[in-house]
Image (cartoon, rainbow, N blue to C red; front, side):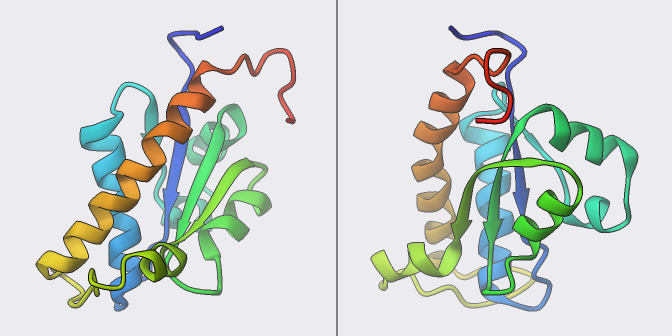
Length: 143
């Protein structure tokens, strides 16, 4: 049963200085801003690192999808440490392995291939968001 207030929290990597981190952020922006704005909410990783209470309350209230740019998995670690429930962990490098032609370059601004990789990743996550927002979390909030 779908409820209009169901959301999925998207927590992308902050990976400043790394193309895969930039892809993670851009994928989050694409998903939240363009593809599923009514079903998602972006929480900046930096807010969790700083212990922002509103960010912690948000990730406690809704399932989270983390998008990490490297093997450190900072987004996933911080969501867990902040009391959130991760519905799915996504690694940009895993997506890149399936789309080798979309090699991201650039940091402040991604090249066209990196932008395309971010868009592909965001589009892949739309069905997950749709499935999660259709679930009734009140029955099993820790599933």
